[in-house]
Length: 139
Image (cartoon, rainbow, N blue to C red):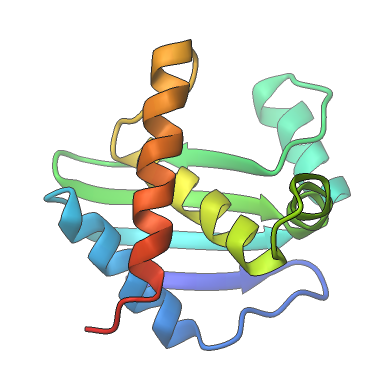
C-alpha cells in the first residue's frame, strides 16, 4: 500500500497518479510494493529527524527508512518540500520535476541503489531520469 502524509502546507495533487507511477517504478525493477509511506514535510521537521536518527546536523531533501524484505519494498520516505523547492530553483528545473527526482531517489534506495561513490551516483542519476520519464506514461 502506498500512502501520502503531509507535515507541511504542501499537498500532493492527484495521489492516484502518483501511486500508479510508484507501482510502475517498482515493477520496472521486478519489485512489488509493500507498505510505502511518503511524508512531505518542512526543512525543520526533516532536520530534527536527521539529528535524532542519523546524528547529522545538516539540511537534506530526503531521508529514507528501509523496511524491505526480499522483493517486497517497504519504507518511510521523508521529503522536505522546502529543500525540493530550493533545489529546483538552484538547478533551474520545475518544482514537479525535482519532486519526481527526489521521490524516485527514495524508491531507488529502497531497491538497493546507492549513491556513495562516483559510480553509484552516476547510476542513481541515470535511474532517476529513467523513472521520472515513466511518470508521464499512462497505463
